[in-house]
Length: 125
Image (cartoon, rainbow, N blue to C red; front, side):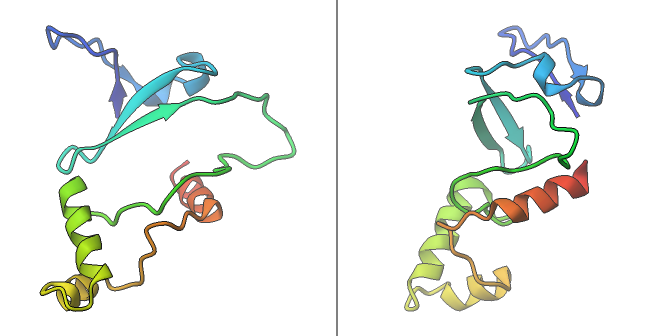
């Protein structure tokens, strides 16, 4: 993956993210955008609330907190996720059974589990 400063002329000077530590490009109070899945275009606005020195006794990365569940993969972006939630919430919705079968698991969109996110982040690290 690569990152770079947006440029109105679309002439990006991209840098490989594996060669750069996040704390070398953002500080507490900074905000940046992160785009995940260029097909569905999930755009996240990330605000760095605080930065602490690493604790040598701690295992990283750690997700400390967050809000709401992550949408499932390949749901079709924001509009597809809204459609999925509408169908799951209403047992009389014409797509309710189809969407439940497609998802294949329960989904509570309001639940966020930091420990699960930490596990997933550590698998990627």
